[in-house]
Image (cartoon, rainbow, N blue to C red; front, side, top):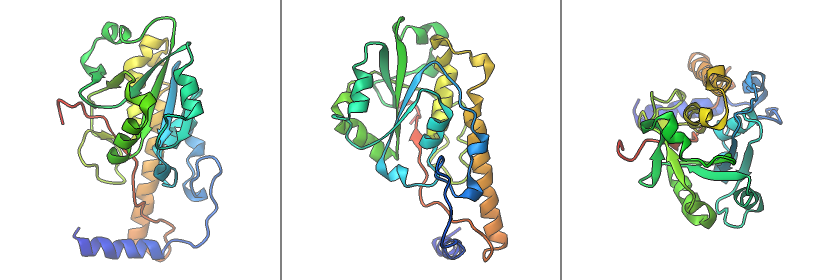
Length: 251
């Protein structure tokens, strides 16, 4: 698809958008694309703290919010500079938690390259694990981390994606770019057993279930818009939230 074709298709999508839509108060999706019925909240025995950039909050497809709704005992905190954020600092200063950040880079420990025993040694016993996740584009995520003095010094973990992202609504920059919810799912897969969570229960697969349902629904809208643009209620999302968790050695 060339630029002109894309712009023409985008114009058709925008014209087909209804002027007024009712939004679900929980997932902030239009009623016709609400994914709440697919949510199955579970306790992964870890605290995920999802730090969402203000731009992401306004985006319709925001998997950080979806992750928060799927994870019991999780936090969704909007901001850019978290240095003085009371909720973030309360978690960081709580002695019952050992905090790490899910973030790629030279300082990150690649969980995929470790055995279960080696992963367990990363986290002290007697403390609950709190994992901070940055929900934003690569550019905004980098600024959020380095502007926040209380986050920049946290131990970092990452992983090597075992398969391409399933975010088929939009072409990814490369196969190792994961959405936030996919990244959290893979982290639980690798770390859960060290924290007393039964990976064999596959409860965490509810994350990918709701994600796949949302993606499938969006693809249906795209197909509908292409066949009947005048009757379609779909508008192509302008942005997609991603978390790039490709290990630095593979980038």
